[in-house]
Each structure stands twice: as C-alpha cells, then as structure tokens.
Length: 259
Image 1: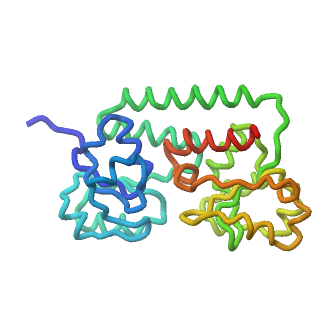
Image 2: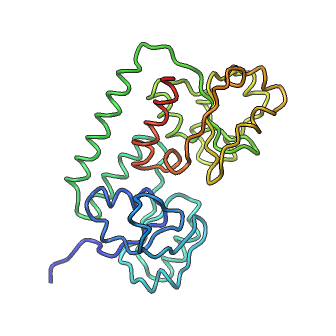
Image 3: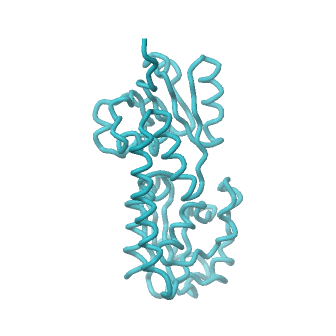
C-alpha cells in the first residue's frame, strides 16, 4: 500500500484552513474552528469543532483526523489533550511576515503540495516587494494600530511589519517583538505623546468604536483625532497570521495610507 499524505485534516485556526484551500486541497479539511470565515465555502458543511481556546475533543476524535493543525501557545492545552488521545498534531507559531510565508511552505510540504506552496509564496513575495518599492522614498505617516481598547494594546509583529511595508511608520515598533498581548499594552498618555497621524482599530472579534477613542481624555491633541483619521480594519483580515493579512489586510492598509 502506498503511503499517503494527511487526508483528513482539522484546522483549529483559520489561516491553515485558507492556506489548504489555496494549495488546492480544501477537500481534506474535515473540521474547523467556529471562528473561521475564510474561505466562505468552508463554513457551509464543515463541522465546527472548536473556538480559539476550547475544543470539542469527542467531536474531533469522531471525525477520525490524521492531522490536527493548531496555532501558538494559547492552544497548548488543546495540543496536549489531543496528543494524549493519540492524534497527530502540528502547532505553528508564526508572528512575522517571513514566518507566515515559512508556514505556507512547511504546510505545503506536509500535505504534498510543495510546488504549489512555493508558487504561492513567490506571488506573495513579489507583491510585497512591489508595495515596498512604491512606498520607498515617500513620507511615512505615523500610525497607531490598536488591537484592543481596554487596555490599549498595540499591533502584533506582522501587523507592524505590514504597516511599514505599506508605507507607514508604526508608533510602537519596539513592542512588536512581544508575542503576548499583555506585553504590548500601552498607556493612553504615551499614544498622545507619540502623536499618530492615523489611528487604525482592529479590536479582535469586536467592532472598533471611533466615538470611544474620540472621548479619551487628552486625545483631542492627537493629530489623527483632530483630523478625524480614524479607521477600522476587520480583525478577520489583519489579525489572521496567514494569507488574509498578506492580501486583503495589506490592501486595507494601503487604502488608508493613500487617502
């Protein structure tokens, strides 16, 4: 009998689901996270087996996966339980643009789609290169990206990098090296001090409310507030460390920076 690549795959975060579809093997995805929205067709009849932090282990076992894909230390408890139940698990932990591209390559190798993965990564790299070239030599507006509003949390590494690729200057570049959101908490007075020209909100799983930002004490001195340059990017396209951030997320950043 010929040994095969994984054929029944459960993805507990969205980026691996979307990547598998882009690699031409979406039919292998037999279970997904309930938060998955990309691609749209995967939600039609694919069983939802988890949130981000919790999983229905009985449902997962019942689907008889030959591989489960997870993300980051936040799902470490899920990984441990699945391993104890004898289920093969791979956990990715990409936090930068380069690591997102590497994840795509590694996943392609895992499912026997190495050439397709290399071609996909080459397309993303070329787009990123062209965007960098267009931004080169131009004035870079200061951008404050807010991942959460209470407490204030600045953007994770790949978001910070994409802001720079798109032609902006991240107000808190020194914080992007921190994986944990708690280490990216910023004080309101520090945002005022750094005086961003653009504020982008992407409150994970929650609507960004501009009126709350406008009411913050002392923020009427912030250039972005004075000039009403406050924007929202949906978390599903910018806080997903995969294809969404490199495509629709980057496009959203470009649209804002070009206004």
